[in-house]
Image (cartoon, rainbow, N blue to C red):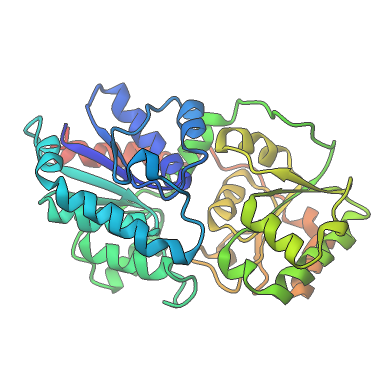
Length: 366
């Protein structure tokens, strides 16, 4: 085994899954190294995507807790980095097992991404960064994501950049690693893996989908409350579904917003990726603060209102999406005109995993 996938969140696993499964197809051994930044949905995500459970846990399974607050990060980070230090010899032997150049593959912009790059380089392995080069233009927004992705660019041996925009970002920064344009994010291949699955919940004939969960949004009490009330007003004439986890539900209760939800503005449990995509695919439009969901909507042609101050994905280049910058007037206008943002699906145009596989093969990693 010369390749290790280093991940800790379900989003990272989902977007690495196409590369993992492509290595399965060519019978190339690899390992899955998990930091347990997310815990609850890991097993269901592995099961839904037909991926084996992680080989190495950087946090002991009995101590794994989801990292959902900034106050949890120091202890979790100590556990992850401490495991790497204590087991560096074993980790290095695992990477050297088949004689090919050792490689650690990371994804995205989380603390796990940064730790994976640091640990990979400390093990004298190459580091490949999938979804490299994305920038919002501000180190403080989003924080810590912008800091993480910028630091990983200084460590990565190979940067897999989704588009020419990210290639230009990395080139301007003089990133030391190789820059490869994959023409799209691997999420397009992840979508293809699960598009045929059916929804496990009863859905209205027509509905809008709302996902608002980022900490930077939840902690802005007035903005969050005003947004929910504006959506509730719209839901009087058009059904809305809002998947919500613990932090969102807690915030809703703290702000006294429980009464605005009901049959037409319906809270549902968060769904694992493979069961969320069928819901997304049937939605008339999406209101979200998720950059990943923005990208999926772009590929599927679903109208998308990105409710954030700034984003690392360019909405101006996407005819189906609009950025509110937390302006409620922009949100309300979108809700009245969402039909104008519908575009044809582009999911069959891109094959980024194949580009990554060809590049890995050319470097002798398998």
